[in-house]
Each structure stands twice: as structure tokens, then as C-alpha cells.
Length: 440
Image: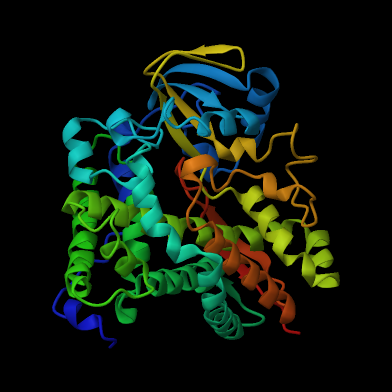
């Protein structure tokens, strides 16, 4: 037990039910209350991502109406923003197109009440400048190039250990055995979270990231309970470290910063939720997506074997191809003309990163994984502008090391069983990917 574990040893946090099972069970038991998506261009429909049939819908929009207005969906009325340049244009104007929770927030669904906003708290991602700026500045030092150099050896050691323990010649779940294990370990490291309790982190992350709760009080309460458990845990760690000297971990940096030292409990809880989801869901789903994509495009894996120096570029291409965060949402704070369309004050715009990363005007043959794609870095998987993912370097490091270590060991996972995709419209990813590694 490490030095920080003592503060948690008398607490028992629940690990059941998990978010995926709870939501699926509730929807099965209440089919009449499940939102019905009937419009073809209602790409807020979680089913199209679970069934992996979103690509032609977005392609049709990009060809016919790349910026289009849709009404009467279960998530309300909105502009679908589907092309890369339009998304970058919107994100470059954070005071015109707001992320603030008080203006609707950054996900497709609206808060159901002011009480919901207050109970979930505001976080730095759900703030506009100037409020956003000092909070982001407090977090950014944990992800500098120097910090990445410091963490590289540890990332490589852990990745090698996990890969070396994988079975050969028998089927297993790559998502569970590799993606979840590696990203959970890194989350525990950047927070200096008690190692023996690290399995709580993905549990909480799944509850924070899934937007299918709607206005059902039972599911909303379960989510709030999970958030309160997480907050209780981190507040204990916060109190423990508040009077200690500043350390390199992210929690300590926040405590000792001007921008985030005086957060109220709700803001602290909400910020922790954003950081855990950002550090967990996005990287782990790309780790699984890499394996699924390289199996689908074996000629691209052959390129990596022939030239391992392509790994860094392959990371950017895999992030583009997978797009682990499907969208962000903005709200117009004034009338604004965009791409020939008049956006009215108060209207919401959903920025479909998952579509922009398949934009044919930017990426040739966009539905293919091409590990030596020259402009792979133009993807918007990390966002753009002031809200670009603060932890992008760490995600890139973990993914690059994973690819390099797979090449070094000649590990070629073949998809031989079920691939189960998440049924949600925010995190685009997986809950299972059954593979087999052949014996060399």
C-alpha cells in the first residue's frame, strides 16, 4: 500500500452496476421510455455508432449539406457541423460559440434544469475565456514535453510487461487485457492515485462519459452517486496533499495553482470527471481501435513492420481513423453567418469530429487507414483552439509506445471473436474486442 492509500483504506466504493450494464438493463426494462430516433440525419442516435453504420450518413451530409439544421430530435434542435474547416472556424471563436455549462455545455444533450448544472458542477471544459484560461493553465504543466520525457520509460516498461503476459494461440479480449489495463495504470500515475484502488477509475469514467441517461431519475441518481463516490475519494486525497509540498502529479499541481486551488466541491468534482474521462476513455478506445483497424487493413501493418519509424505518424492516423470523441457542442451567443448559413443566437451547433476526420476535401480515401498518410496530423480528434485536449501529448506517447512494442515483439492480433462498440454518441469506442495472437 503506497503512502496515499491509507486515506482510502476504510472506504468501500461500489463497483456494480457499471454504467454500460445499468443503462442497457434499464432500457430493456423500459422500452417505451427509450428515445426514438426517426430522422436519417439525426446523428445523435447512439445506435448508428454501436452498429458501425454512421459513415454513409455523414458522407451524405458532407456532400449535400455540410452545415445543416435539424429539428425535433430526442436531443432537440441543432446544427450539424460536419466538415473540418467549419469545425475549426467555430472552435476558433470561443466567445461567439460558447462551451459554457450555463449556456448549454459541450455535449449534445441539454441540461434538464439549472439544478442539474449546479449538481454536476462546472468544469474548465465547460467554461469560456477568461474563466477557462487560468484553469487550463493550472493543468497544462502536467503535460509538457519535459513531462513526457520523464514518463516515457515508465510507459514503455508497463506496455512491455502487459504485452509479454498476453496469451498466444488462444482468444482473449484485447480491450480488457490491454487497453483498460494500460490507460488505468497511466491515470493512476498522473494523479498519483493509490495503486491498489486504481480499478475504481475506469468504473467512474464510464459513468461520467455516457450521455444516455436522459431525464430518467433512476439512472440520473446512479450517475450522481458514482460522481459523489469519486468526489469523496479525491477530496480525501486533496485534503491529504494540501499541506504537503507541490509534487509532479496532476492533483498536487491543481492544489498548488492559483487557477484551481480554491474550487468549490462541485467544480472540483466536475473537473475530476472531465480529467478522468479525458485520460481514460479516449486513449483506451484508440488502443482497441488500432488493433481492429490494423487487422482490417493488414497491408498497413506490413508497412509498419518494414519501417517502424512510421509509428509516430501511424498514431496520428489511428487517432483520425478511430476518432474517440465523436462530437463537441457549442451555443451561438450572437447571430453569425457561417458557410452561407445564418446561425441564430441561442442555437446549438454540434461539431461532429467523427465526420470531419473523414472529410474528403481534406483526406484522400478517408475511410481507409493509411499509416503513412502525409496529412494525418490535420485530424480534429483532440479538438481545436483554446479547448484542444490538454493531454494530447500523453495520449500520443502511450499510443506510439504501444505500436512500437507490438512491432518489436511481432504481435499481430487477429480479430477472431466479438467486437462490441459503445452505444453512445459522445465517446466513440469499444467495450470488447476478442482477438488471437498466433504463436510465433
